[in-house]
Image (cartoon, rainbow over all chains, first blue to last red; front, side, top):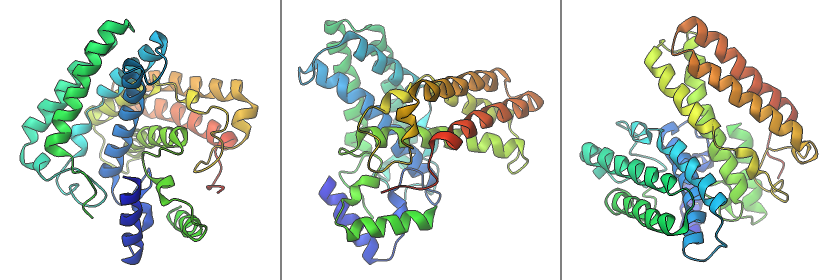
Length: 154
Length: 154
């Protein structure tokens, strides 16, 4: 991932494209930037919970719940509205299928929202959290499998 | 901003630093990345509300309220916990003063949270929104004046 971005960037520089296209706030690509910031926060909160459940980080009920609360807050933001027509180009790994199957894409987002409700409701109890993490992870994967390219296409 | 980032990036490339340091998800700088994603979402939701109040975008009570709800959700995420020791380096515009004046920094974040409550409570009513936007904007500025550098320091 890191290497491939590096190669993509080197290519972009060679082509004279603005390097600002991969910054956090990108005026030329506001929706792509918004989506990436959003999912960066989702990942940064979900990752440690998953790692705790897998024993890769020490388990902390409080740490889980704080992140579950963050995920619940984030999931209330309808990021699917940041995939409007024309925002399928540029710095994005969103596959064209998103724009062809909008209803299914939105349904998969709703699945994530629902799974996060269960994660928050687990209140840090390790067994319930482990089960809920599996549920959330499946909704991530279901959407990524269908709608997220392995690498940037530009 | 765009130009200065470009120059900074060119410098980074010259120095052989990883270009991945300005991507949305950065493994080497997780806290810097988290902060920037967070504030990108804050800005992307607040900007259009401010523009509507200033007459730069057509006013939409519904559009305001959706973004105010997003801001309320985001403000529940304690981003001040992503400024731990050692994360003052790298791709960041956070001034060292943050780490010297943690209590004040957190108080200024709490001011933002409070101002956003008022913005959400305005329920899209244009006069009340205009007043609340001023309130939120002042809390942004108060913190930026003290704690955000005009440009990246690396």
